[in-house]
Image (cartoon, rainbow, N blue to C red):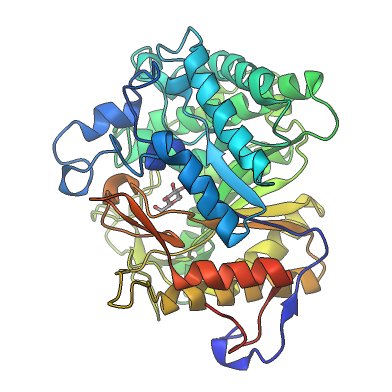
Length: 472
Ligand code: BGC
């Protein structure tokens, strides 16, 4: 372990101007799903079906940020957050997918004004998985028509909020919004069709590039555009040739499938060949699509939680846990070492390796970590505080990994911790707590966890404090 907690005796200072923040997404925190003219999203409909999210949980109320945003912004100010990353709900802004709701846009203007009065910079994600159900009814991301719909929606939001927002993320993780949503069926809208998953991924990548080109045409130069991709470095269980090949395949579809076209390299040919058993993406990729996907971005949003351990199964018909389309005979092996409450492996070395790999692959494109964090079983103690020492250790070790990458020349510009609040965590419902702020979902009471105090110290010092020097 290169970044163990025991060996940090000096503060690790980050570059001047480094962006520190915390993030959420609309369906996970807003609630108010029938208020302010909001229309139904695919997550409302999906969680209305039995057996989808844990315990039948839904985002109907979530953290009630729709009503409580002034309190939440005041809490952010207490932590000293310079940046708040949140997503706009497409279904709030365009309830039927076609017509604009001024009330929906006004909500985000109010939220942003509140942030600005506290000196907090908004970072807006235009799509974090909550598609208007009306658009899903017309084929959702399987339909190429969504590319134009998304670009039109993006322009509406940009026109309404562009005087107040500099940082823009088009789409959050097409891996989840396409593969989990249309391929494994684990996420809304819950389709289990590998070929639809690839199609949906292509359309999301195309929607991203199309929107960036159109937004940039009318945006002032200080507006910065990006896409958020999630990466899970693939680690082979052993070095037998079969395992190495399985690792290449996993890495191809999980990581390179999204990064390569963004960088103008097209879809990786080995991945297309692997996926050919389930889908031929060729027909969906029209002339000019790849150039549009490769529309230059200002920085890449990086989501990282954990690596994936890969092993090749002897039986290619065996059921598999891997959610990637067309991956018969591959299994995700159990994680190693310390785990989070989600069962995810804590492996900060993979983050610094990932950042160095991205630096190499992108030719030095600026990177912003837009999600990193961990779920633990936090409770409010008798002293009224939440002593989430495991999260502090997780953050410390991962920030240390980021710092190490920067020292080795990687251009990392910011770090957005996931998450600001405990929230509705998709299929895990309310059973997994990711926040640096605890939410009692019965009373909506917010309590700063010790990790929030730790993070406040990081922000104030622009450094990871030496062990023993933080108030967290
Ligand atoms: C998603 C978050 C989610 C987290 C944990 C990320 O990939 O973007 O919305 O809370 O995973 O499930």
